[in-house]
Image (tube, rainbow, N blue to C red; front, top):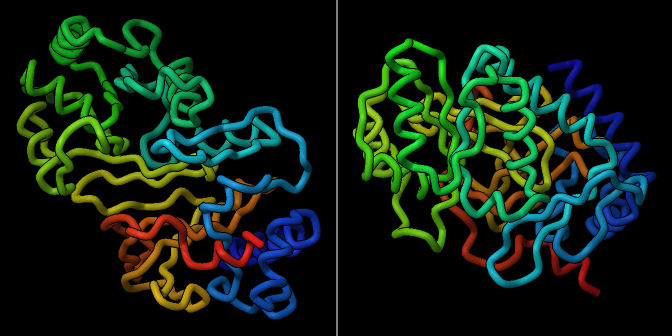
Length: 311
């Protein structure tokens, strides 16, 4: 933790001096890096500002990742180094699951595949390239082929990862229910607007029954971050080593704690050239062991604090 704190404080000073938007936000809430003595003192930039401002320390980017959006402005993350992103998601995946080369990786990401600048597609594409070559890949509108591949891999006791958006996984296992003993099923969210919204417990119960597995894994990531968190069951997420998650008071965004309920704030040390300190629009619970749960979303369009930057 001491190493993480040291890196976070150094990154805070760097981004304060090189990221114009972040510095303006810190100044508007009257926080200087010299005032920060613990991680919860750090100013967390409202994530909605990625929709209206260029959040960058360099003003240069190798790629611009964009969120899916719901009809309005979308978030844009100007990624200065794709190599840094690849290093981050590879380190996070291997930390929790081992080498991607040990798996057959099958991706079911309709919708996302129509957006080549989706960070999730970029991550999955690179993990698939590292995976076992036979059968690994994207399965768009290929349910019957996917069924046959999963059954064949299961019979051969091959280590397999099926990663997909929630509605597509549900659609698939309802049409082709099966009993898998050697497959990890991982959902990445993504139900909104495609099917009736389900609470996580109901979603996971349906997926467990449809795939015949004991647990449903989950990936937690977003356009504005370069690190991910993973859950191996029950919706309890563990952040990657480059990531820490906190909660903020829903009425006072400057009141941040390491445990309890509130809005989720994230430190992402991999986000060196944009902003490493993000106040998300997710509501959740943080546990004493550093793990966390995602319980919902803010109803308001913007997180408190964004209005400071609209003038």
